[in-house]
Length: 306
Length: 226
Image 1 (cartoon, rainbow over the protein chains, first blue to last red):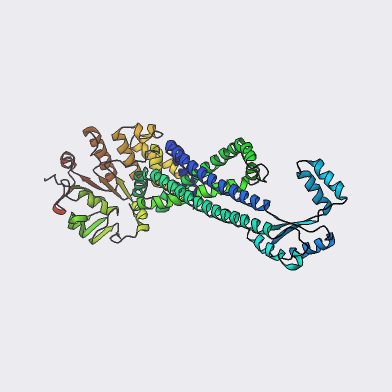
Image 2: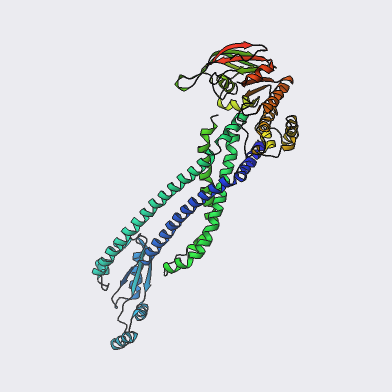
């Protein structure tokens, strides 16, 4: 049993190295396809991260009339936190509200002059609400239309309506982008699988006479199949290591462009790859070897009927 | 050793390979199967090694009825028969040593025995000095001798040689036939499929003549009739 297994492994390695050009070409094709799959999967991850980042950028700010006490605002915050669609609520005190206004004002002197003229902070406290989903903002906005909140909320109505329209559009775009990337990933995956299958098929086709000879000399189906499976395993293993080895330097080179493109968003592609390097390598090996081995098992079957 | 009882083999479009052929070859015999192209000689050889299956009749090899042999039993049968092909059928990416060793490796033979037996067999066929070469690095005659070595290495009781001299010049052909005679003298049953008149007439052994799938002559110490 072990002798047979050892021989199959030895023949598999011999087959790989003694048909080195065939092996190199096959590995190259598997590399290209794994690279393509990695690229599409990477884009999918970046897309998902971007959409998550965009979602996180969306929030609903509610400011109350200055006479509303901060205790009351905090009470409203506690009430809203109990709503299932609410993810988090940040309370903005009146002082913080004023600081934000000063920061964003073009003419800070003018703001200071106006405050001095009024003699007191004219701004009320506020709440910055984040929803778990984009659709959740509509429900939160509806809750805030309740008369018990309406009477103390400054500037409601139209503002919510406008935000709601923008949020609905954004939600629609996000959903469509998600569906499109999913289909694109599937399409490229199918193309890659077919290309790898065909390459292995051609590699085995070129050795069909040898398979016939092995059978005529008395080799069992398993003894013929085994070395080809080992060789295919090597194709997948070498290809997946090469892809991972190529992917990291490419990402290192392109990372500054990504960082520039996603400025202000918490997206770090290189960091993600470094953090998940072993998982990515494992996935590459699993996909590369799995595809090659399954392809060879299918391809070799027809030549075993000698 | 080999018994064909009313064996018929028909290919697609009603091409007759063999039709109602009954032959009995005893252990230790040297039998030439002769006939023109399309007479059924190669079908006869292919039926012995279960490369083809008979449509009708019964085939028995060494007491084993292989008429309805199962796919997984075929390797066991082939490991008991030595086969020599016209086109050599050597594995091009294996050395001469590895080609001969392969016949033992498929049978699960121990590595130590393979290392001792293979050089001995290669010595018998005069190739012990070239065992590390690849098939494309030796001549046609030498390739055929490797094939004979591979067919002999597991000491089969039956050797089937299908046109073993077809791709060789007359000198190499004579050498191969001499080798087959020697193998037969050691007790191995040899079935030689050929259309080489000169060789058959020189052998003075049993000759079975086929024509259009039928046995038209079966002579002890016979000659090429057609």
